[in-house]
Amino acid sequence: MERYKFLEELGDGTCGSVYKAVNLETYEVVAVKKMKRKFYYWEECMNLREVKALRKLNHPHIIKLKEIAREHNELFFIFECMDHNLYQIMKEREQRPFSEGEIRSFMSQMLQGLSHMHKNGYFHRDLKPENLLVTNNILKIADFGLAREVASMPPYTEYVSTRWYRAPEVLLQSSSYTPAVDMWAVGAILAELFAISPLFPGESEIDQLYKICSVLGKPDWTTFPEAKSISRIMSISHTEFPQTRIADLLPNASPEAIDLITRLCSWDPLKRPTADEALNHPFFNMATQASYPLHDLELRLNTMGEPEMPNLELNLWDFNTKQDECFLGLTLAVKPSAPKLEMVCNASQDMSENFLFCPMVNNDREPSVFWSLLSPDENRVHAPVESCPLSLSFSPVQQHTSVGPPPQSTTGFTMGSSMQPNMLDRPWMAVSAPFQQTHYL
Ligand SMILES: Nc1ncnc2c1ncn2[C@@H]1O[C@H](COP(=O)(O)OP(=O)(O)OP(=O)(O)O)[C@@H](O)[C@H]1O
Image (cartoon, rainbow, N blue to C red):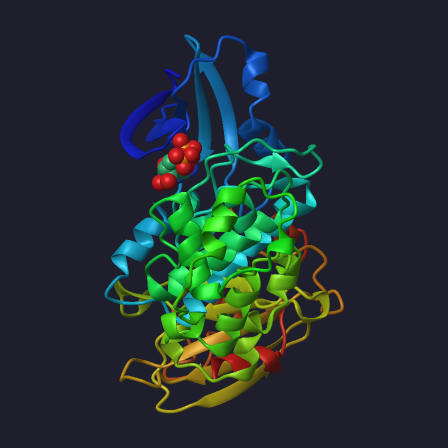
């Protein structure tokens, strides 16, 4: 570990303390999780759930474990370093709630990571905002300390996941449960992003069940044939609950969002959508149906740059996971001075592009330009397209002084190292995508 210089503590959890550190050979900044218990043998380390799961799971929305080191019977995990966790971001946003577009982006990323995890035979069991790490709006699932293999045999021993996100079957001590416990947590986190406060903030396990009943009503107890905590069932069965609907708790959420939360937070684990089903819920297609103010979009214009050499920040993300609708949306904010909405189509030999110029609708800010990119291979993207940061460099525009996209020859993309392999593998071209334009308008 002498290769690493520890800088500051990033977090202190049950199993380990996490520090920001720099690799003195490569100058790479990493997060080092120093486990609290001692490890006397390598076999013990390699058998840890966190290690087993993370070695198998390689996905842009799952935190990357770079290295494991054991020194003086102490175990260190070296992870890619992220800037914040979602809990910290929510705390900062108490006065300025997230837009539905921002929530959709976080949720879509979380569900993509979760879908990969579940398909690879793991479930997380401790999803909570603190375990969702975020850098530049890119979200990654972390803390696989409680991850379990789906194929592992029940009965599962009781485990201590964070109470507020704990599924009812776990609270009722069911001896077998499934990846649906993660989907419950997804529902609770989705609601929390709207309210900036937890949906079910139980103060004890029984209070947790009371809090759930006061929103969902009492369950059909036959849903939990394996529940061992009969005393909890009895206690709840004999209590009357004034009911508050989810829609009343989240007045700023769309009907689609409320519907998704309601499905995810179903008493019956079998009724909860899977991660893939959730990604196909209308909540994630709303961009095609509704008009949104531009502040809903993932636009960033760094005005710190020189006027003629603007710094641009670019966001790529997918809008749908259905193969035939999947494409990348590339949003680019520049500062043309178009006074009002105007569309310019620019076609070249191998590339056709639609550029859309939109003035900011709600304020006097400068208009922006949007590109839509689509995979050239028959409009199909085979691997899931992931959100990924790109860096973009722009040369000064020669012939476009007032409005219009910079000419091809003057635009240069620098794909960052975090670019996904599926994107690097093939060329990209911009094509007309009416779907996306509807979104922006
Ligand atoms: N790769 C990382 N980059 C930046 N911060 C991180 C990273 N990994 C963890 N952290 C920070 O450290 C905190 C604790 O990390 P982690 O959840 O892995 O520890 P833990 O001991 O397993 O926690 P828990 O008590 O939730 O089980 C996280 O909430 C996060 O704020």
